[in-house]
Amino acid sequence: MAGNPRIGVLALQGDFREHIAVMNSLGADAVGVRRPTELAEVEGLIIPGGESSVMDKLSRLFGMAEPLKDAIRAGLPVWGTCAGLIMLADTIVDGIEGQESLGGLDIAVRRNAFGSQLDSFEVDLDIPVLHDPPLHAVFIRAPVVDTAGAGVTTLAALADGRIVAVEQGNLLGTSFHPEMTGDTRFHEYFLSKVLSAH
Ligand code: GLN
Figure 1 (cartoon, rainbow, N blue to C red):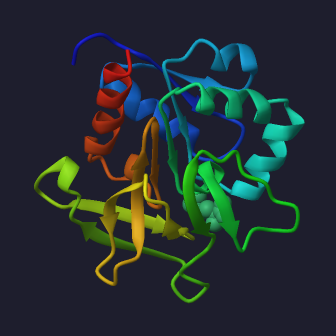
Figure 2 (figure 1 turned 90 degrees about the horizontal axis):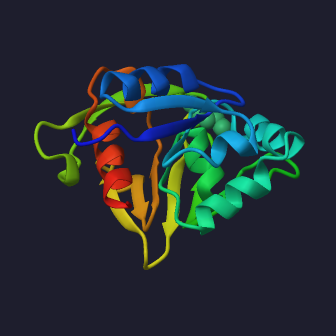
């Protein structure tokens, strides 16, 4: 990999440590981001899985919501996984009372889309941009993309057609958790996006 870009992982809540470890293993310089000054120093940002309603509250409490929205608008490459995908969605379906997102992705995302009977599951997903073999994807109380605007590219869908990975300009979103399986191709895909944004 050329260069070692500084990758931030939003570290307000959720499984940010796992993303930092994967990114460092790929030669990136990965750091947790909790403050606007830390956000200003990164070349790309991951918003991890966790609980989007808590992440939303903490980002507003710590004065991070507006700087994050500004960075998204300014073209910073940002990848949201699971709760992070919810944070990037323009519209949240089944959010808690008063829940807000940062927005940026022209999608409606449904929280906890698989209900309580199917809380977590794993499936092999064909993701053309990652080439063969299929990616083993772990879903944990995962959201799905209900609707996507014309500018949004679908990167992966389940067998029933429900969309679980999208890309739009500088933004990337996945319903599942690529940081948990040891397959680093999605992290490499994001890194190449960060490098080509230079
Ligand atoms: N259900 C969580 C939410 O609404 C997301 C779960 C996850 O990130 N694994 O934010």
